[in-house]
Each structure stands twice: as structure tokens, then as C-alpha cells.
Length: 200
Picture 1 (tube, rainbow, N blue to C red):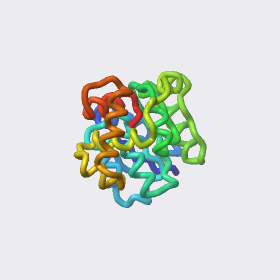
Picture 2 (spheres, rainbow, N blue to C red):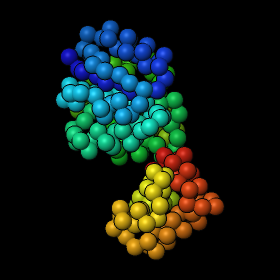
Picture 3 (tube, helix red, strand yellow):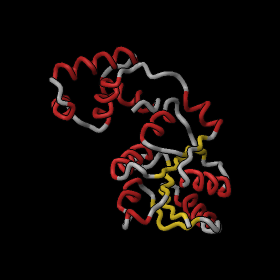
């Protein structure tokens, strides 16, 4: 029996999915919640075999939740569900450790098969989502992505510098380069733009 935790902030969809997945002989839903933090706080953590996460949630989104789950358990099995696959978001999800990526229009039966596949160590990416989500290449360097991710989290330049073990002037240079590449007015707009493309 595969133990599943489902995190999705759309209550009606989540409760319907819970009911439908419970009809599957191979699955049981051991918990569900409306935020990524609910997935992280489920106890005991070892009870969950596969996490099914909505991409867009308040508090922690699906990608950030996946990163936290994988940091805690590198073998964590995660399936991401989404309505909209923004350019680059698939790369972010896969880099975070997500092994399944499907649209919310997927039937409960098909989702169950994806959960089984991911639980067995496999991967599954919906072909149509892959075409949409891969989009175009990120123009930012790895360090520019790092500073924009921390900017998106609300950290000031001094804290970003301390977090990345860089000089404040170096952080400002990375931010200036990112702003120029993205053609925006300031670092906060650059962070929003990078987030919209799924690069951070």
C-alpha cells in the first residue's frame, strides 16, 4: 500500500482527489492540507511514501516545499500538479527533486498510475506540460539566480551577502547584471520576472 500526502490550496479539488485516490486498491491518503507547510509538518514524516504537491500554494509553493522535503530526505518521492506550467518551471521542479509533473486536468486514475510509477523509482512528465514548461533558456548565471531567489524571499543586500558568503558590492554587481539582462527597473522587479519564468 502506497501512503500519499496531498497538498493543494483548492479545497474542493483536494477533497475530491482524496476521495477518488482512496478508491484505488494500491493507495491510501494518510493526510492532506492546503499549504506546503502542511506537508512538511505531517507526522510521522516516515509515514508518507509519495507527496502530491500543487505548484501554486500560499506560504510555501510546490517547488519550495519539494526542496525542503528533499533536503530532509533525498529519497523523497514527489509528484507536482499544476494548472499552468510557466516557462522554466519544469526545470525548477526537476532540480528540486520532483519526479512526476502532471496537469490538474489529469484523471484520478492516471494520477494514481503516476504515483505508483514515482513510488517505484520512476519518473513521469506530462508531454504537453513539458513542451510548455521548457520554454526558453534562462539568461541568468547561477549566482544571479541565487541572489534573485534571496531577493524574492525579502532579504536585503547585506543578508544576501552574508548568506552567500559574498561581499555586498559583489551582490550588487550580480543584481545589476540580472536587472540589465531582464530589462526591468530594480532588483525586486527582476526577482518577480525570474519567478514568473520559473527560474527561481
